[in-house]
Length: 162
Image (cartoon, rainbow, N blue to C red; front, side, top):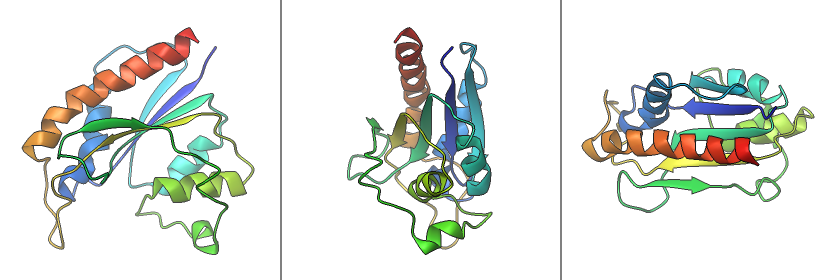
C-alpha cells in the first residue's frame, strides 16, 4: 500500500500564509484513500520533521509560496532535493514556532530520513500580513483553496494508481 503524507503548513496570523491550513480544513471534509494522512502542521517545523522521518512513499506539501505569479495561482512543483543542498548548522536549530519547508527537508536528510517523492502544491499569496499581521485569506487565495484541494486529490489518485 502506498503511504502519502499531505503536510499543510502556514501561519494563520499572516494573511495568505494560512493557505495550507485552509486546504487542510477543506481536505478534512472529504474521504481519502487508506494510507493517506492529511495533517495541519501550522508553523510546527519540528513536528513536520518527525513526521517526515516515518518513511512515507510520498509527501505533498501545501503552502503559500512567492513564485512571481498572480495572486491565487496554484502550481505544483517537484523540488530537486539534491539542489536543495546538505544541511547547514542553522538547519539543526529549528525554532518550534517557524516552518521553512526547505530547511525541514535538509534536516530530515541530515537525520537519515528519506523522502522518496516530494511535491509542493503552492499558492501565490497577495499578502503575508506585514509587521502587524492579519487574519484571513485575501479574495484570490480564498478562491484558490478549492483548486488546491482538488489538485491534491488528483495527485493522490495518480500516486495510488501508479
